[in-house]
Image 1 (cartoon, rainbow, N blue to C red):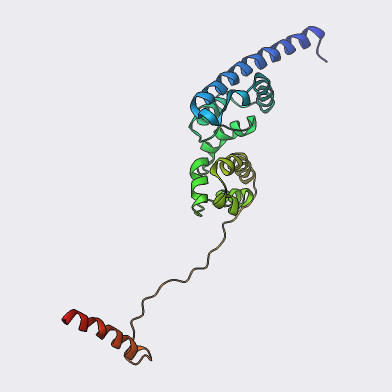
Image 2: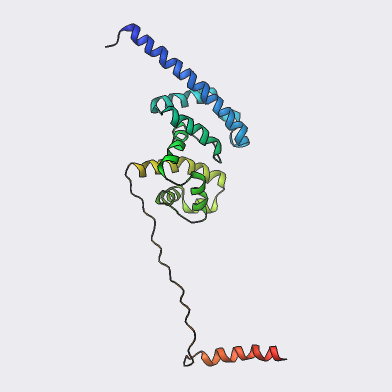
Length: 197
C-alpha cells in the first residue's frame, strides 16, 4: 500500500495533469469556435465540459502523438466532435485505413459504399435519414456512429456490403425475321421521307 505522502504526490500529479489537459481542451474549444462559427457556440463549450473531457481523456490515456493528431484532425472536420471519445477516434481513423469520415459520409449520401464500415454506418444512421433529412442533423449523428463502427470493425466485427444484382445491357440488333421488324422499318421510313422533302 502507498504511504500517505506517496498518495498525496500521486494526487497532486493527477491534479496538475488534469489542470493542464483542461487548459489544453479549453484552448481547443476556442479554436473550434473560430473555425466552426455557429456550429460551435461558446455557450456549448463551458469550462465544466472541458474538465469532463479532460477526465475522459486521462482515463483513456492516449499517447501524446495520438492526442496531438486528434486535435489537429478535429479542425479539418465539417463539425466539431461531440464527445472526448469521438475526438480521440479521429486520430484512430488515419492509421486504420478506413475512409475519411467526411468522404465516407458524402459517398454514403450518394449511395456509394467504398467500405463495409461506410455501409454499416449508413445503416445505423438510417438510409432514409441520410437521403431526406438535413445534413446538419445526419452528419452529427454520422460523426458519433462512424468512429464506433470503425472501432468495432478493427476489433473483429464483420460487416458486409450488400451484393447487388444488376442486369447488364447487351446490344442485340434486330433481325429481319423479327415480328417487329416491319413496324420498325415503317417507322424509320417515315423519317427518311421527311428528310427528302
